[in-house]
Length: 354
Image (cartoon, rainbow, N blue to C red; front, side):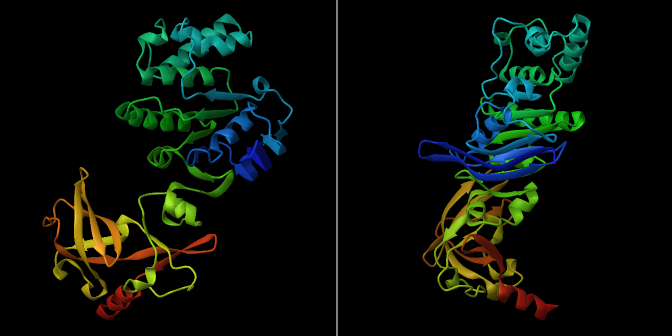
């Protein structure tokens, strides 16, 4: 493994930012550290960089324990949320800064800087100052400056947070393509699920100083291993008693809470829209919101309010309409684990049809 955290703990007064964390990251991977505020993700990143010191445990980069190695000698490039560019320096000089500190030859500096300016798509702007650039351009300069000294590891702390939505989306795509092209091991911190899913090869979910789950975006979304991940990833409906729903038998009488994602529902105006209407619940539409490519619909089923989607191409609904709600599957909780339950009535009816 290229980066390893072994039994890492870090405490700030009564707050555990890292609680016996063990983590392995392969070389060349682009990793997203994702979690809510206060989950410890930024502290973990800063400890890898050497900007914070763990109370316990070891940090290993490329086979070398770096606990006692100062930040500037760990071979790490760091991109800050606030860019942290030198305002009095041009684009060229900002990117060249690390190489100047390393006392590289002038011709080598010029060659490297011009290569990076070409890479970040800012050729012709090398004489401009940060104040003359857009937010997206400044972030690209910060990225190039971090890469200039040829780091063995790139760390990014919420690199898109200070950029508007449209530019952020374009920059995310650019960053993923660029890092893939360079093949540099990279870790970025974010609290934005869409950002993590779009950019990362693997996602690490953090919560209260612990690692909840590590895996590909698809794996984490489809197979959350803990109740926290099931609630945190994607949209979700938390219900108190899933045993009252058709097709779902109780697994454990003490644990009846469950999560139903909007995509687990089919909301139909009539039984003609559903292949297995006998497996559906009756519901009442409570609210409808336009979401661009679909409608988000709140439906009351019994005492629960469930959120689902409906295509704009389907027959429109209005508030107060009685509808059928087919729940395909749910996530149930049992201790610290999450299980997927499929609708058994639906499954039985489909088998009879087959």
